[in-house]
Length: 459
Image (cartoon, rainbow, N blue to C red; front, side, top):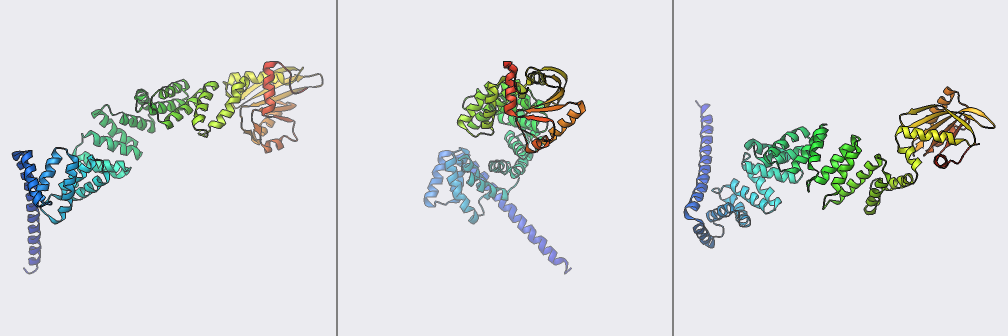
């Protein structure tokens, strides 16, 4: 019996505390409901008159302030409501009859309406410590965390808000965007699609859905949405940029050109988007071998941004190509046109010689080997040409391969030609071998001779 007595005392104490808390909550609720009922009964003017009378006697009269706050909040007079709840927040600690949760929540929401996000955050955080299951608090606090780019916290709060109201479109929207920024693309896709079902005109979310499709590898779905968004005055420029990039990656260059050109037709383009659209449009034109048009856009970019990406190098490279048709063919044309040009160059290489092409082979559009039987007044032999399509450096490995090929076809000599240059190692490799290296300037003369008919280098 003695052992049971302390347990009974603890139980009685806890029951008393619980009853007191319930009574306090009930009294707060009763007071709040009573004030609302009183306001409905007495009318606006009467509530204002009585509240102002009481505040004239005591500027911190809790009941009068609560009545005013209720009135201003209901009328969405946010500046007046904020001032009222600001005073009430300070009174909560000394007055247990005040509903601390509701006061802090309304202080936070009124601050939010007025763009005072720091104050809103402070009020809503305090409110949430008092009650975690309120939709308004969780949703708006989640929005504030999203604005701070705290996407994980935002997701947790918005997910809780969603459990309280599963069909609230803004909650679904911002929860989806938070998941998107956390790169949870499949989760984001499901949320954003549902949000768009509820609010079909949400173009920003539709754009994010297209990005989600792209990130999970469903490019067909992505390109449909980006194409649909191209005319949109807000999302259109970025949608055109994304659509064009996808088409570039798929080697659909005419479609990419159309996308980029549509993007540039929009008014009030952001500078960074405009510059990137012009740059990529130039790249698409280069892929189509329309160098003149590409240079127009590259120079336009360079005017505003002289060192944008590799624009100076591209202009230097393609200005020369634009002025030299055969150089264009050598570096950029289809394999058939490239081989035809190389064949003509091989025939024009030896002046006043009888040249017969014996064999032509191509390696992945990287180079062409042409085996020719050459007969001049002084000598007759098999010669192997290798035409390499690059403006960069050619290394020793390619020369070793070329040397093996010369021995394989039993050629007496080899000529390796490139529009670029050879590394020092490559030059050392051919020093004791019957291989001549012809770099950019030399092959330029040969390509010129193809059109002019002049006989060029070797007798």
